[in-house]
Image (tube, rainbow, N blue to C red; front, side):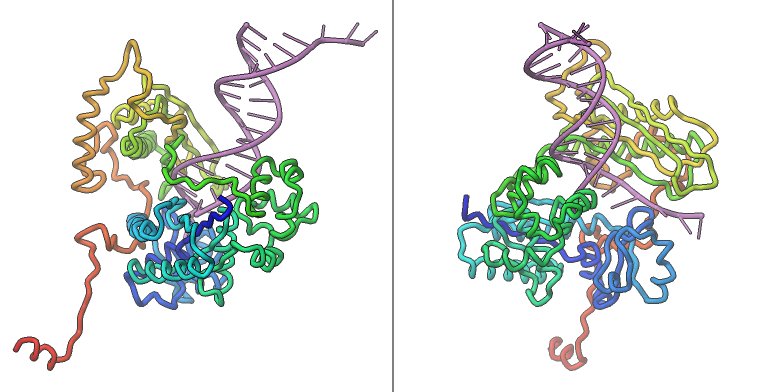
Length: 438
DNA sequence: TCTGGGGTCCTAGGACCC
DNA sequence: TCTGGGGTCCTAGGACCC
């Protein structure tokens, strides 16, 4: 495995680039994409970064700036981003049989077995193909380990003269670049670790790479030791070709306005539980408990603060919407406290397992077989007619869901909804038309 | 007025067991 | 003065990631 070469490819300012694919007028303009409820900026085009808009900055702080500078502002359109991401994955698999999808916009590809010139050319071809077929600009980092491939990708992004590709496979390239990069740019080194490293004079990536592995372990646990080895070219992190089964699952949301009544909170939590059950069924997982929480906003300085949470146990593991909704509402009833302006609620499960491998209850168990049929029908309806087309009455139809998450500036779901397809307009001269007619 | 959501991994410390 | 040794499991909290 000494000649292993990994490529890390990712979309530049991915969400913003997705918005630009179907709207040519956004080219060259500052673009930002907001989090749920249009709360914070979570993606920024280079032009928006130049205006000083920070990652995670609350939108209300930059609203005036956005108006003044004609920043194009979008709510998150996860359907669109997920679909474009899947299309990029299809291309990656034509380049390499070994692909790890690391996040919505990042993938590791194994490009071992090619010479330096060939793999650099492959990286350039890959970028060009993604750009042409999907419309997303990308950067590629090459290296013998994941940490070095990530670092190479970072260098490719920050140095336009590299034209989107950086190769840190060779010792010479590493000797050139590592001393020039701040230690906190290393994948896995966050704020806390960077502060510890800088306190002992480890300031650049090169400093970290030459650190004694045992010392790195003493300072940053085994995680730090692995990073040192990876920076030296010794792989500690494997390519994960088959995504591991998830260990936990959560659906949590801030309300678009404060919630003060039990009915509304109960309905919101039921909606979250409905979504949670759908996610579990899609992966064949089950849970034997539902943890419910809700709390006021830490930014709400006027009102009194309160935070509540409770775990409701089930008689046996399930992923049935009816069971999870009932448990979640029971949890809300148990810990509800009147007199607060609640800002957020969620349902959380941990210790998930494939449902068919879970222990059945001897007494008081659930009718799993009957529920499976009902849920399959429910999922089929919602898949065909759109999420929420059929919901259990137990999930509550009491209010107008005015607490529901806001997406007031969402672009069309161009690639996944027939009624939201982009419309292409073709122009031709009269003469061309006439000649076509003849 | 207005501040996101969803994950993973690691460690320390306590409870408990033989 | 002085009170074993070696395990497992669970949980909370910290850190990090996108």
